[in-house]
Image (cartoon, rainbow, N blue to C red; front, side):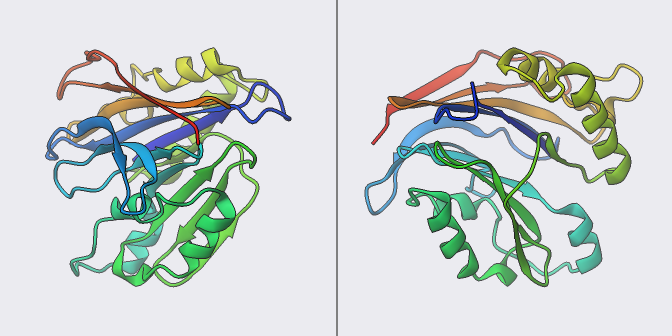
Length: 244
């Protein structure tokens, strides 16, 4: 249950921002805020860590490549399996050494996908527009052209997604700037909390808002967690590293 949007100053710019709301069950523990880490090969990256399974849902590395994982709920329902699987949060960590989307695509096809429940992998880099790789439990597929927002929901999926797309058009629209996207990500629905972008349900809620900023000099990860059963946004954590 997550929502991602992205923005560039202009079509020719290599700078971009990616904004991400993580929606989670209230049964999950609080995540560890983002920190700078390194892969075994020495690639530096920034990512928060899921306290329950040890993976991450969002990662940006020193090449300016951002990877985000969203659950593929419709496919998971069709799959209808209760077998234990590896955490989908391992996938960004497996791909953290990649310098560009083409490398991600090559490694993605070699993943032992059947070890994971269905998912979407969103990829964006300084030189390339966003791409989505999909594992639906049966085959791998890729899309080269997508538009914001990219959102998923375990609850009344079609209605919630449609509502969030409509809300994006009202708040941000096709000419959205960075400020409009932030307004969108922080928006709630007073009448039906489940369809809000900043979501509230009895069993789940938006637990964090992330802002990834990439330019020619540095990458930056801004992270705002929220308290359970509250509308309070906690202090923002910022981690920054120089581009390679």
